[in-house]
Length: 386
Image 1 (cartoon, rainbow, N blue to C red):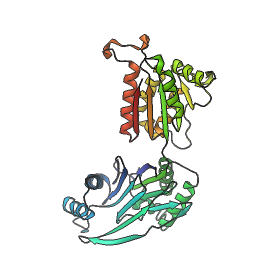
Image 2 (image 1 turned 180 degrees about the horizontal axis):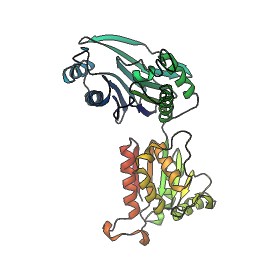
Image 3 (image 1 turned 135 degrees about the horizontal axis):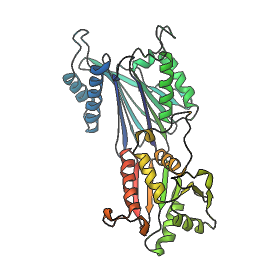
Image 4 (image 1 turned 90 degrees about the horizontal axis):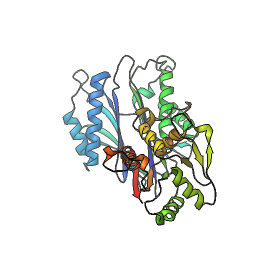
């Protein structure tokens, strides 16, 4: 079974506080995703520090293979206890999902996690244990494509308490809202954004507590192949084109010469969409059977600039329109894909040479930088040269 675990997070700080007392950590490895949501005691700076220490300790220890007992003991011995209330540090929820679909959830004093399958809220089997005087709830189950898991801090279920809603939002109400969102085939980041927006509205813009949500969506991996530039040896032209056309998922061609090679192989021509052209961005092209066709080095360089911007990585929020040009379209496809393969032709274009790059092709440098950024975002990236 091949699955991809998509994640989305959103948080609100308590009204009047600059820092959120909740923290979320998402760690990806070769075969699993580990997520931790911690809710620090109180609010503001102190709560933020406590929850941040909690997610870092848990994330590091679980990744290193520590047992649950070792994790709880370490947290109990590391973080301070509230002198007034005699209670400890922060609450937390840990979710680990492996690529084979095995899911493991550990909960300590956070609201129970939500598990949505086929349009229904499901409660997996769980067991409660006591470790060093702390009640821990553990769940082990198998996930499949289409499943959604979500964790919220108690600031979400308290939303509207004493105001819009007498008793707060309540766990079941949050679950019903998540069900409605999930029916719209949203991505995890949009689901968490909408949930937090509703939470802020219930607080009438003045949250009475820190509120956070972590959403996970189980889906099939999205693959993307980008052909950029013709091979150094013309004998390799058919091979590179064949690789592009045989790969699953989204297919992108960058560069006029590369586009002509692909179009010729398909027995068609490139059509140019002049309406997508901007003063500093070349227009988009169309080849039947190819998802996106763009100019080469200018578009790639500007896409790299976009990938370096935090706003671009977050994408346009739900309901927000984004410009439709070659750079925004390529950036969007890259960010939406999980497995990306670059087929880079090394035929050199003298116009793209820069003496300061010690003879390296500017295109190759740009692609390598893009690959580095995409890998840091948790994507599988392969660069193959021709």
